[in-house]
Length: 255
Image 1 (tube, rainbow, N blue to C red):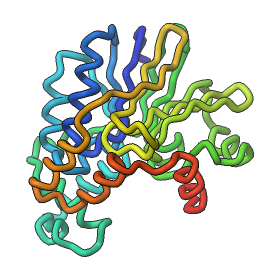
Image 2: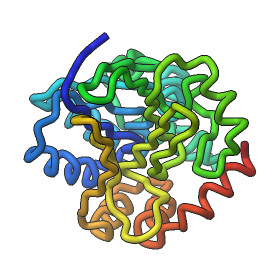
Image 3: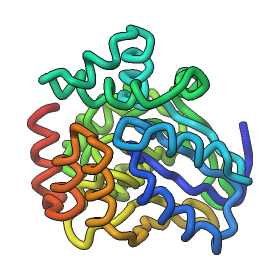
Image 4: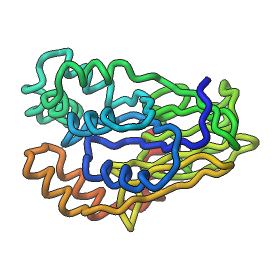
């Protein structure tokens, strides 16, 4: 198990390079030993650019697989990315677009992502990083998840701190002797106002839920100019962000 003093947890970037750049700029002034990219990194308007930027960092990076990462790899492997990108089905269109804009080395990188990562963080102990829950990269876990269901989700976990993402909303939740931290979404947050790029910093016996500012309208206009088919999702999330309580209730109804 890897040991480090601090971890920057960057989840759900979703191909949003301007948001990623804002977080990386803030990290320049922070002593961090490790960056954990927590899944759903490339599925979005600028997939290759995001992957290249993270790979080029002069820092130690580890990668967790998200459900959208699987979908982009699957679209790439099917070889039907052009048709998928033009599909009327959003479940095909978004990964199809991203798959059409990456190369073999990007595909191989995403295929190599780990399901979970365990890191010993000084002052916090062994911390498990996963995408959605320790059981699945799609399972729903929010602030509104009942305690009984959360206990079931954590029943097989032998560590007191779990870091996740997937629902694009930050929280830091305690239940019994367990702590579940959602790092939020860098690129496509459902966080309410003020919007920005959301992430987490762990270390020195602390968990800090952070936000980085950037030009939201400029990013949306850039994605529209690229022809990204899901630009409306970014426009809504960044410019008219939903209330986190509403988001939690919505996701719990899906669960």
